[in-house]
Image (cartoon, rainbow, N blue to C red; front, top):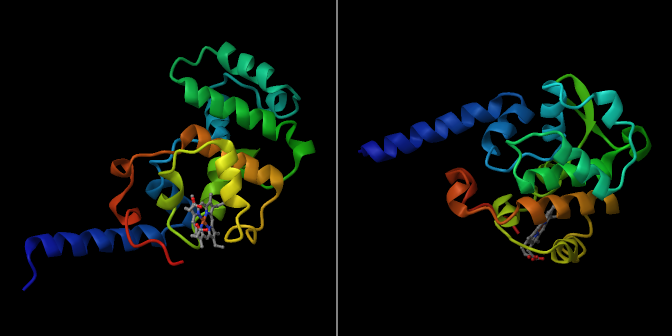
Length: 191
Ligand code: HEC
């Protein structure tokens, strides 16, 4: 006989299954909402609120110090230090967009280059659960070192993409297991 708890669990699993049948990206966004937004999403918010202009930002070339000053100058009080740094790092890596190339994602009607979070979701969960990655609190060198290990060199990323992943994770990794949805906590490693 099924216990109430058992039934609850079955219901929860059915919900998960239902979620996974909606368009892939949307479902991912729900399940992975615990991962802090990357620069693409943050820039998208600024464009949507009128604080940044798409044509200006995406054609600018600035140093990281200049982008930091730009981000600080927006007067966006809701962005904390880590969020500002994530955005400045993204802008420095991704702009001018036409010149840097790479795939883009429709973000509120604007095509913006992928950020470190997008790349982590795309490249870091086919062999093991994303939890293996995002719970680690590491230096940039350690992240790049992992991605250059024999177990990871076969992943089809460019140097720039690996750096974007590393820098996103330096700032936003080390997520507590408590903040990760149950279904992503255990049994995810297939290696
Ligand atoms: C091709 C399969 C594959 C993909 C894709 C993959 N990993 Fe791994 N990962 C492994 C294997 C195998 C291990 C365990 C063996 C090891 O540690 O090298 C592992 C372990 C890890 C670990 C824990 C052990 C360590 O080295 O610290 C981290 C962190 C990690 N991976 C990060 C990443 C990141 C970041 C990405 C995305 C860029 C990624 N992985 C994508 C195969 C993969």
